[in-house]
Length: 350
Image 1 (cartoon, rainbow, N blue to C red):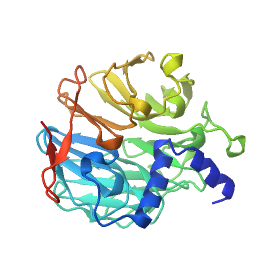
Image 2 (spheres, rainbow, N blue to C red):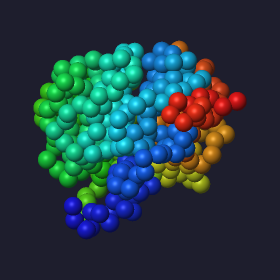
Image 3 (cartoon, rainbow, N blue to C red):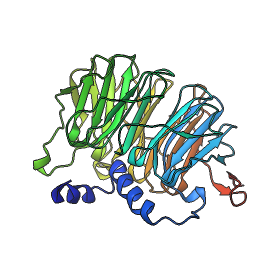
């Protein structure tokens, strides 16, 4: 990697994907055997399956709740790498991706996490499964990995470009999208065997010196979708082929704009997006109008959001921050967790 590229990445440490690369690298080389309590870790993603939930984060953190996020226990990841994304296809089978090619798999709800061999040591930021067998992972240096056998083996489907890819989403086994650095959008119609770079309304060249990154995708159906990114940008497509910038300069009033959006979710006809400095936004599914959710929260980075089918929702972020709702987002409460005892997991504090 050139000196110019290293300098550019250093300037973007506030961006969630790039921040994790350097944080993982710096601490994994000098990490002590003991670590801070889980509630102080940075959390990067969350997923919900019925009453079950998992959170992943810095330094190999995996937290699991069996009671709708009321109490939590630590699961052993057997890694010190930062963990960026977590996906479960049912109550037992799940996958996690992280730093330096980290790929973990469980078939027993996380009681045992095992390392999955993958043909890369790049950072793996994005992860998506359409069923228990077909999945994709994306990351730095144009990395795209694909499995058709539930993660037993992964094929290299990378784009041969030095670009950081942050998220991937497939609707079915054939049509998918990948977004990332420089505002890039790639589209596949053949299950990811080949990728076409689509025109992006915010794309910039590396030599421009601008930073226009896309971090998260959201597709409610096989055609309509959204992409979220740096400085609060929101892109929309109605057919999966043409993308427009509905909010190129952010979706909030000017005094609150330019706050990066790191994650998004759907529930009950409403879109949600979370990001920098405690940003939580909502929008009706068929509209482009966004508003602040008006939640009381500290100005920490919010990195992940997920909803269950019955209104359970979780938002996670830096410094162990967790918000929980049971009514689809009408009311949120902060979950504060503390260790029960060294090595014996965590639980919600009074």
